[in-house]
Image (cartoon, rainbow, N blue to C red; front, side, top):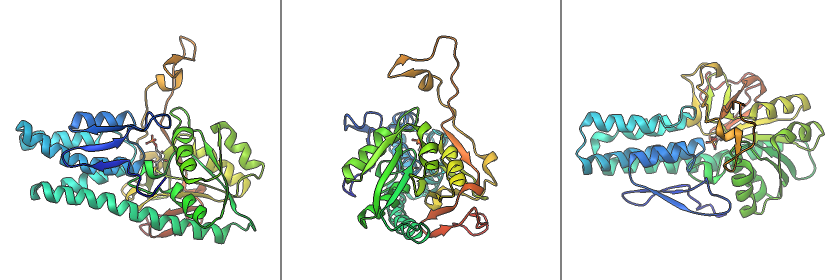
Length: 343
Ligand code: MRU
């Protein structure tokens, strides 16, 4: 995959989104030209990953402005439609940050709104590249191995999940560029398979050696000593370092703590929400029961079973060895908290 892969692209009047629901078997672009279409795309995970929905939300303000001009909306209606985009998913703070940053420029007109949205996108790519270097340098200092590293990751944090390059996967790409990745264990990431469908697809494009494993295999792989470090992304990081990320992440962190290996979170500072004191204040998205009761549209659980489908979990900050941001690495478990010194 080239660095140019863009999950979210403004094409002048509309947004072109890589449809992540049909990857890896089909590469399709979904064109979105109104607020309903964007809210639906975010909720169905056509576009997903905290920084990518932040960029989509940022351009969503421009979409709303254009739709409002076409349909003669009042200022109140425009605000309400922008609020709908902002609330399309509740956990990733990047969506709110992206929408609010661009909405603050509305009075200055479409050109300014579009320039601000483009800045959100550009700055995310720059942050990802910086995170890649900081995370790779930190790992090479902290993991004593006289061979390339064996890394584990959960969900998808690559170019598809961001404005470009990737967060946790960006660190892995940086290490791979230095010839220092032996293998990546990519958790499949039930129930929507962001790991086996999307991370594995990106790893194949990059020529990075990897295994896809069931989420339930992760702890055993770590405790058997087959992993040097785990690195994941985040949807919202509280002031005390508690980190919301894709469901299944906290089990990886617990296994890393038991095995005594680093558990790293890589996320831009736009994912750090110092207004949220700790993980208990993070709203966790509960998704539809069918996602866990069915597979490929076919019911797998017996009639009468209920489904419990939290999309994210919260890893306590005490389990986060390092938080990699574009500004460097905070050693959260050792007491360096994002709320004390903005990451
Ligand atoms: O439900 P998703 O696929 O949007 O969840 C994505 C994750 O949990 C990612 O790990 C997180 O957003 C970071 S993406 C760089």
